[in-house]
Length: 256
Image (tube, rainbow, N blue to C red):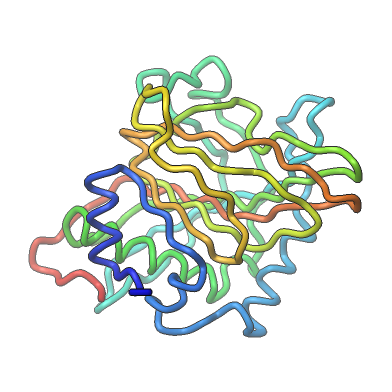
């Protein structure tokens, strides 16, 4: 089977508003399988210390979360990540998403990202996303990048809804969704829709670490089905990445 390259994925983002990349292909494009490394193992272990999301209803205490933010600035063939001060996360205003009644425009405080979460694997993931977006759009000189480090817990014999709000858009320019790990669970199928269309453009269940979706959030809506345990208590760990305030450079060659 032919391995999909960045150019093919960029075309999908432009034409379909979304592309799915299996974890093995992410590593092939990056040029290194980072998953067996000690850096990745330490990175994945950081999810064990995620505190409960303080903004969930008492009946929905199944989501653990931290939040962080960087400025990505072009440097040679990649981007340097400059950590920004911790602060609240503000969902899009009511003109950008129908979620205004849920959380739109209201600042929410989350536990800050730890130093371990800002390690080399996160930088590699951002380079991957921005490399595709630079081909889909124009070479990106800088971007504001927000990280949501999330664990969804599925109690033994039970399940949980990964997104309480249901089908939605997040009000960002682009978003990247990346599986870090999952254990003793099934489900959590992601569905991505072109605007308010009835049938999804794409449906996929993340199974392998670094399985990835890149979504044009200005155009698309998305949802995730229920996560169900397979007997023992299970979980699904992801990092959700927001890309906003994109600035472009016509003179810069996109990262290969």
